[in-house]
Amino acid sequence: MFLKILRLVSRFIVHVIARVEIVGMDNIPANGGAVVVANHIGRLDAMLGVVLSSRTDFVLFVADKYRTSAFWRFFVRHLDAVWLNREGLDLKAMRAVQQRLEAGQVLLIAPEGTRSSSGTMQPAKPGAAYLAARAGLPVVPIGITGTEDHLVRGRLRRLQRLNIRINIGEPFYLAPLERHTRDAQLAAYTDEIMCQIGRLLPPQYRGIYASHPRLDELLAAT
Image (tube, rainbow, N blue to C red; front, side):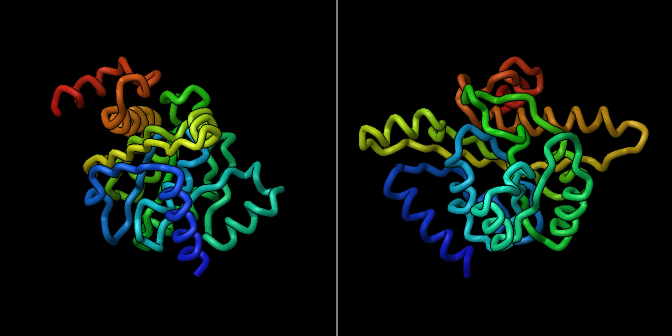
């Protein structure tokens, strides 16, 4: 019930403050486990995650630093989200999410771990790659533009609607991790995820991945 109310309220708010263009909605599986990865450029991104799909079985991480907030504790409890310690690899949180993925739920995650202050792609953490490779589930990349905090504040202050674009790419898979090459695989898989997101974004959003050889390959293939 809480999720239904949250989704209705979020959709109303987004409709009022923004024009949202969504491309590739069919790429998000209607059922079964998946790891949905997106760039993270503003606070509004979290609301879009709730609005985007009608699925009720998604999983969210919430940074452990917000445990002191009554609002976030309420949010985590009623959405059954998972607290995450971003200082390193939080294996307890990873195991909890792994179990939910195996049960057919869908994870929404920003591989960068936090909002980009510049609005461009920043170095990603290996958590999303680790979970996707362990579970053997499809990875669905999403590129988001128009939700930067400074842009949201500026346009709303002038009573102007935002122009948000959500570009959803085709699912792809990561091969299982091998014990003796795990670290190298995770690094390569993390780059793959970010380059898959990067190709869905305009050049000015690609940040440190703009000159990555893998991104060049993906762009050349489109």
